[in-house]
Image (cartoon, rainbow, N blue to C red; front, side, top):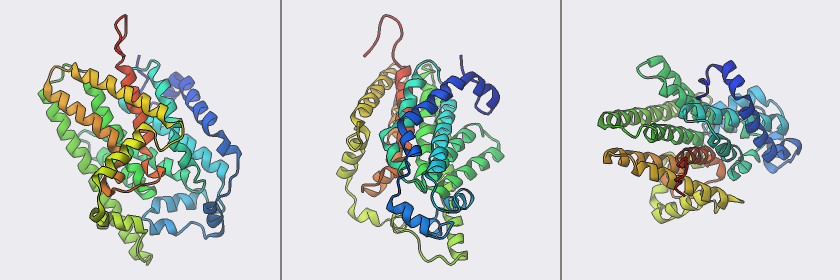
Length: 360
């Protein structure tokens, strides 16, 4: 039995209240220490002595974070409130992802929730008390944008709303936008895994949808750039943050190292960079094998090729900054990694054969 659509909130909460409490419990067990412990880092000290809201956000083209800073934190950092908002926003993003994928419920979502809400990289993000709440609000906007886009079809209003959500996500923290392709590619992949009699018409439609999706993302990026330029010009803000300027200027290309990119992405995936990460990487690897086994059972070769590309695309989406720039980035630039990992594990667990014959 499928859960009701997420937009029917009352029935959704009524039917899924135990799962929601379970997810909240995961977050609290993993990160309650950050709520109860007030750790003041150099970032918090500087922020507490600076003007509010921080104009530095505008220097980084993060005017959405500037607005959140003005609305929610017009004073010294508040670790309790910020952490709680971050946990709730991350939980909501995960619930929206499950609604997007619309797969069988069962036990898979309970197992996958652990990786979505307690992935080792999340601790590195929560450590930024003065900004992590905004990061997860941004990721929530990016994921809701995918939810709206899928339901847009030919409705221009819905498409514009999805674009607005993605621009809002970019304005808070640019790298959260990579959650959108990770979730959307997993969504299309899930459609084929549960409809193995797919034909060429469906493949053609999927390719068109992919083109429209990535075109819409590029439009959102361009719109964010235009708005950011207007804000910097109007408020007479000189230049912008050096890494953002280097990214858009293409200065990283001169020292591009494909071997570094492959090694770095692989290290992130297997958990080499994170504490207790190897367990996560191992389970992710097994899930990929289960999915590949299901892909091999699809009768049409063109569908096999498409689904393999979708799987690979979803997996590498959190690492787009690394792939484009060939340099190491902090964990917060790969905020889509927990959602992607949980999604692939969710899909993979659904592919385990039921009954007496099981493939391991």
